[in-house]
Amino acid sequence: MKEINVNANNFEQEVLKADKPVLVDFWADWCGPCKMLAPVVEEVANASDDYKVAKINIDESPELAQQYQVVSIPTLIVFKNGEAVNREVGFIPKAAVEKLLER
Image 1: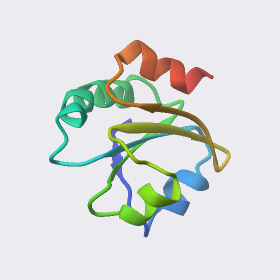
Image 2: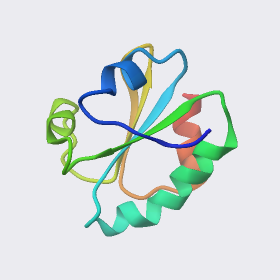
Image 3: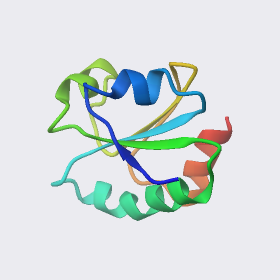
């Protein structure tokens, strides 16, 4: 499964109404830790079809970052059945990202 870019226009359809868990990566181009996390998120996205992986650029969709109280990036939030169920802030290794999806 490939990462999908999400913004305010498709967030509800791609994340809240998804039929499987969605890992959402809140990031920005200027963020060093986001650049470090990007290949990890990409690996996770390609590892399984049991979940979706979405990326939200906070500079392009600040309203979504504000709505989900993203104050530091990178922030990963797992959504299940339209609800935010897990959250992690900062760079984390692949095993920790996978654990977020398991909880």
